[in-house]
Image 1: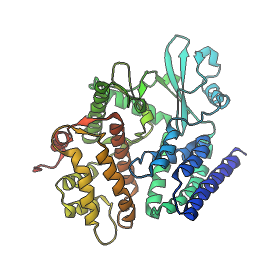
Image 2: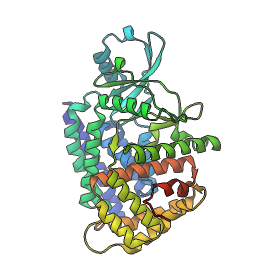
Image 3: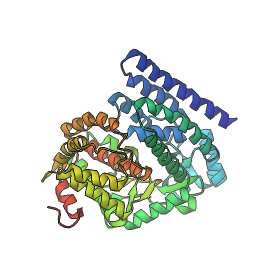
Image 4: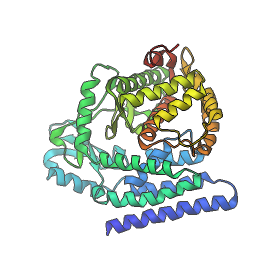
Length: 414
């Protein structure tokens, strides 16, 4: 019965969003706000795959129309929490008598996500921890939800998104969600990352607590912090410290360990009271093969020297360019948009001129999608790096990217 109800709501969401798009087409003017509101209304109730899809979309700040991106971003801030009664049943299944284990559990979630929500709790010994609780019944309905979301994603054709890109996005979504159900794997990732980055005094990762964890509850030691999305008005020195730590950590992740935290939405990051960067969620960590990373650096190197033919060769190597006719003019414009951030000296990620050029470029990128159709692994990697870029933008980061990237290029780069 629960599964049929979710299916009806997904189909109803498709009807509402489809109707908004039809009205847009008939009226001749895009009402992205109305479409975004329809998506928010339906997806904040559904959780799971549908909400995850919208969270992925909301990270494409530089591609989506601003009104639509703003509405979708609300899903990361104002998603309706799951009623406490359902969450409590999951906790009882894990711990039995809750009063015997905890002196208190906050019924209002500390944070909400697509697959679960986090509640602060105090043990009988007085220790404060957080419990990441999987939404009740989600594992049982995941595959049917994914099937319905695949139907919903057909609306992407209204945006003139090629089927290959929609298929790649769906595969990314499916793999990511199946992985996020595995709390044992996330606990292992937390432990691995804590050990790996113990030398970074400016970074903190919560400690997993196996004795309090189970298949549908992941317990971690509580780390207080101000969410990254709330740091935009914070002291500049704090923002620069957090931004520098974020950039250092990402560089080490990629070029030393060949892995990448693949869920970059701002709710997963915070600054603790001492100014350290906090990483709360490690439910999505992907391997980055050395050969793919090297090809990406060849693409960046070609971009920074303004060589469109070398850019096309790198895109072909990455599997990101199909068919005939290299979009050389688009490559040139892309290089002109990106290179200001890599000029010598500190560059301001908050420079609106860069954002404006990226936004102006995005319709041309969509128009060239018959030739630019990245495979699923490239799409996930590029989306993740794009999300981390926008986190640096939110922080107003000022970084010397020329100095940072110079040692990472192949030998012989000028």
